[in-house]
Image 1 (cartoon, one colour):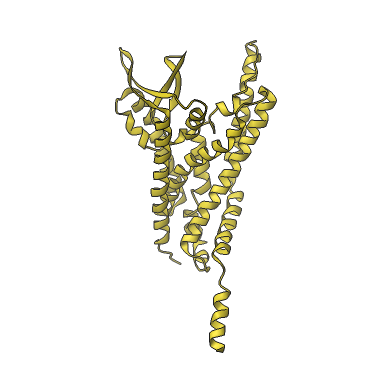
Image 2 (cartoon, rainbow, N blue to C red):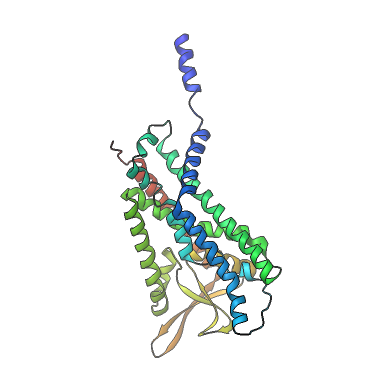
Length: 318
């Protein structure tokens, strides 16, 4: 009876799942807060946001043009300014979440705790979600306040939570890819270089393929901006409408566009040298949006599983 009671006492003292998970989340959050790279990207994002707020004002004064209120300035931007910003937040948030543990040797005391590797891994993922969510919330709040002060009352600010969710989905495509690279390589520098090469290769090649090839549809299944198209409307430059991109980085902008104009269609085109622009085909914006979201979820699922499996089965050498 005494022996049985001691066993029961030991079992009862085992930390609950929630306690173990939250301990990992807290550990990772503190690490993220101390990352100078993340703080640097956040400061840069605020600087670019400030520039986007003030540049139209500066240009109007410089050229003597009248400055007009713009009630669609904040939501009309369609989320975080660029795919590069989304990628940077993903990169600095998780590029050493896995590999850094192996390089510094902190993985040894970490795995000796009464915490499974799965809890460690998903605790890190959840911490990165909280970190990036907080950063995006601050950026949107800053843009909403600044936009209202400079451009007057803003329309559709109730869509901001959806914009944050859209940007998070886009960002986590890159987060999962970076995590997979880090778990497989266990080297932070190699992870960062590989992720940057992948991003640059897609970013440089996508516009060329999209504009000069009839096979640009394949870009809809590659992370990044995707194919280029336009929504027909008032003549704007060389295209008879508003230019749009259709990839995973463009979920927020297309989500906002769909909510405000659900009947719009995206027309794809090809530039033929000496022959001008050739229209290829059109499809509903709803198709574009749903496909990009499904593609994003597929990349997140596959890459996260790859990262988890590699981390769970990695050998730890003392």
